[in-house]
Image (cartoon, rainbow, N blue to C red; front, side, top):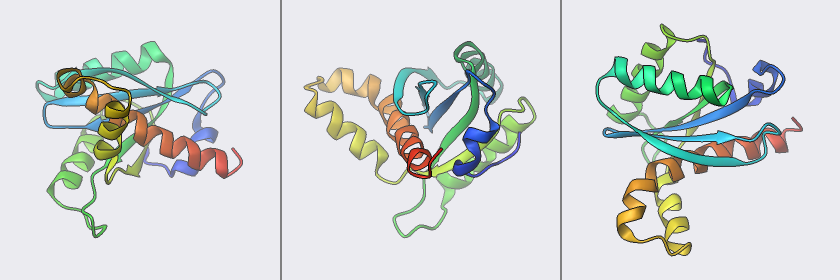
Amino acid sequence: MPEIAVEDIADALRPGQVVAGLDLGTKTIGVAISDRGLRLATPRPVIRRKKFTADAEALLALLETENAGAIILGLPLNMDGSEGPRAQATRAFARNLAGKTDIPIAFWDERLSTVAAERSLIEQDVSRAKRADRIDSAAAAFILQGALDRLYSAGT
């Protein structure tokens, strides 16, 4: 699994493949999937985290079902842009996933993605209880949408 730049994702896809966006949390993995035109991110149900091997198997099965050819992984940078323990854990997850798949991964700055996702859910009048279940996938969609917008603005 090579690490690639977001701008190179479209070139890494085979015809018909989509891009997956991931928001890696301690209890869940938020997942979103792009459309085939790489314009719109749609949230999918979260993956409840157990142990890495089970997490990776569940994630890779979902990516295969969705025909994902690349992953945008949210990188939780500190507000000053530095990488702290959460960013290091995210990079470690990506390195461990490398032994299990050839799907390329691009990292995307996810600062404030959860805040933006929660605001969006509130605007949609989603109850507090339902927001708790949907927040990580909504954040994954926010992360993926940012990367798709970058691809589109780059002329891909």
